[in-house]
Image (cartoon, helix red, strand yellow):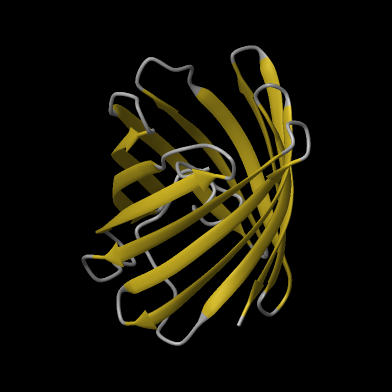
Amino acid sequence: LSTTALAGRPLSVDDADVNEVGHGHVEMWFERTLGPSRSMIVAPAYSPVEGLEIAAAVSRDTTAPATSMAVQAKWRITSVQEDGCNFGASASLAKTRGESGNTAAVTGLMTCNMPIGAVNVNVGALRAAGESTVATWGVSLSHAFGSVTGHIEAFGQQQGKTTLQVGARYDIAKNIQIDGTLGRSDGQTLYSAGLKVGF
């Protein structure tokens, strides 16, 4: 949950930007992940001050069943460049109800806006309770075609399988977005469908 749930839908690889001050959004989505595990997630985010976004997520795994919660702070370190790169960082903490310990993650974020689209790069570290720290990584490319934005991405962690994923989002009205993804990892098909409402 802490590695992907708090990236902006429908991406799993996070960007280096945050909401404008006083603005936020709520994302809700259903996903099928490895296992296969099926989950429903609700994730609000809000920017109380310039360059800082606070987010949370609650995930209900209907297969286990199990409930997980996560919180994240995300900083935009440099200003957004329309034709260049900007940088950010995030730190998150996740916990599954009924299990001891937390999972902590820190991630460096880079977003480069280029003629081919927006390229996001993530490099970080993840530590689950009682386990060694592992490196995490991700890269994505997204491109807007009017009200539809498509993306392709790859992400994973040290000693783990790489996930390849494609997806798209569609702005159906001001501050309302629907989206979906389809991916493959370790021979299994992954998918998600979601809704995002801004405020």
